[in-house]
Image (tube, rainbow, N blue to C red; front, top):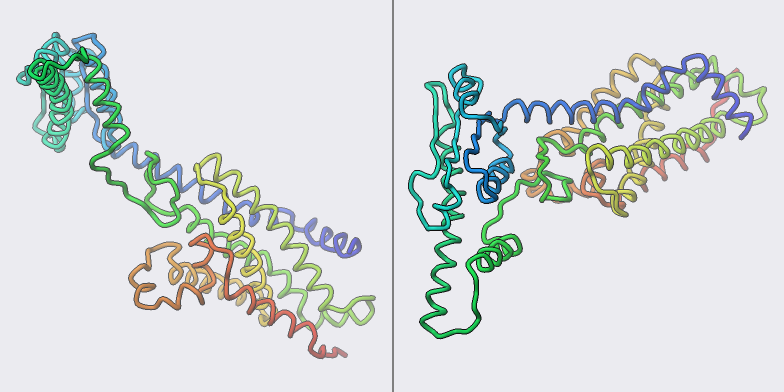
Length: 376
């Protein structure tokens, strides 16, 4: 094994960037595309100016709730600067929380609490204004509820001695713990649906696509060394070509498993994807399957250019039919068997069991034990 590692190292030394590039290629591309998506989402948010004339906790709480909206990018400015940017169409709209906002809220007044401004190019003003109005109505509703509870307490001669502030705080606590209506968009493979980070695609779907491509390209060595002119040299070596190829498969599998572990850590840190037992098991299973497929596929190829071309086509077919790029829920609902026979779907579903894991193992075993060809 030591001699084999030394031999493989000599091959890597001739083209070190080829190995490094394809090992890092899936990680770099997925992270780059993910940050590109986040920047795109940030750029597509509606720019809204907020002017806080009432320096109270209630007013600032309203601003924080507006900032929580995933579709709005809030700029907290003074009124003169905000209106100036609105005239230049740098802001879609401006909302001014007027002085006395908290006082009027506490008195149950709902009218003319906020002044809004729009321009002739304000395309999202209606939606944003309705959202802000609903948040204000929520605050006034809490105050009205507090007054109603106090009136009921007086009528029923209850001696609980509730204070309005306590009732409002209790209603906020109940609201946070008991969501009456909560809607989330969930994408395939996304474990935590409560995260604010939206995802237009599944990062593991992208990774499995580029990882398949990188694996096939890394196994190009087998096509070159399986050529008859090269294999003839193994007659003078103490181990056969099959043993040499199988040991190299083991070496590449160990290296790629190490890179998969690094991928799990990097994705967890940068993309906040969870690391759990099912994801680790699915990754290990996928690595054995795709390495075995690349190994068997490379054994049948004679020309390296043909191998690379067909590898690209095969990778795209696997990704498209496995749901790595586009959802295939309708297809899998009509053909449930596809979940069991497709090489990539078990990984995307986070399961270890993969039908191809056994198929690949059997074919490699048959290839190894059958009678070898003789080269003169």
